[in-house]
Length: 376
Image 1 (cartoon, one colour):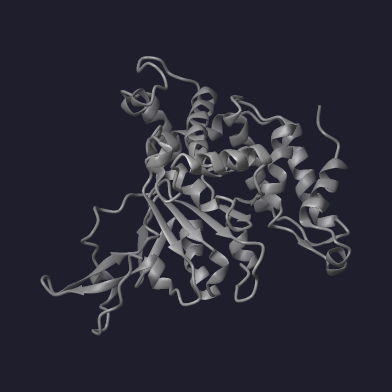
Image 2 (spheres, rainbow, N blue to C red):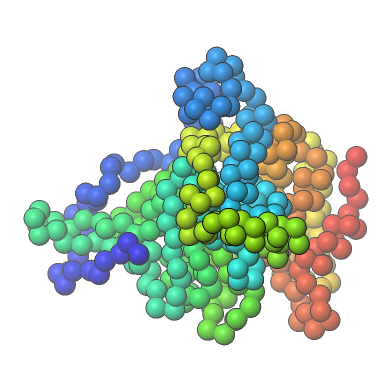
């Protein structure tokens, strides 16, 4: 863990804190401007990954779908099966959101994120959440430099492009809250000084649906910061057989080189994908469809808490991203239906009697969506 303890001297006023370990902090990017600049650049990054000729401007749907296809192919070198999980992870990444993976131990949640980071050339840091983890272990702290007689920021692992928060529900709420500002504002404040995070900053968190003893359920405010909650099932029989065959041939989950995972994208490609979202066409009837689904959760008899307007925005952004990944510059109802469960399942609460009856958030949401007329 990239953290240190604070020096015994009292910290100075915020204006005296400097960060000698990093270049000047970047400002929050304007994705639309970034997209325009990238479209008119020499395109060296894209050429190196075989997207298109430098003189040809690729339309956003073709670019994003090609990028998703390349990244998914590299991830599947290490992770067998789980096509829907990988697609959902790409949606979260391209949409500029954060993802919470929930699945039983040993279902390749951590491996998936590591492979995705390796394929996209993103700086990757892993934080193993434990009961004794402190907020400063995540964000960093100011330390006194004897050679310069000044305090400077020793950055924590949160200052990475891809951050894996492993078993996030095993650390107390005080430490979980250290992620709130970072996930929403994309900055970290240490000793009163705000420090911007990388433009492509993305949190991938994992938790297990078993072994709840000694865990700290995530508060609703923090759950809402995740664009989606992705459930990771056990692999299908043929996929699990491929896992065994891969290990028999020398694959090691700790060493992605044994799977020959290659870098097929750059951070600029990810920013370009995010900048493509405003250009996706959404008809008014699709907006009404999303609105009916979200508002329907607030009126459902088995739910004590429905989805907020932020959930509607998240569902819209996710559907637009999925449309691009599937090579379409427009959203169709199937995009909304495919994203409804990952986006909404962690934003609703079942009534106690519904839980006693054996119902679940997924079951209630599926029933709700089936009862809403699909736009033609």
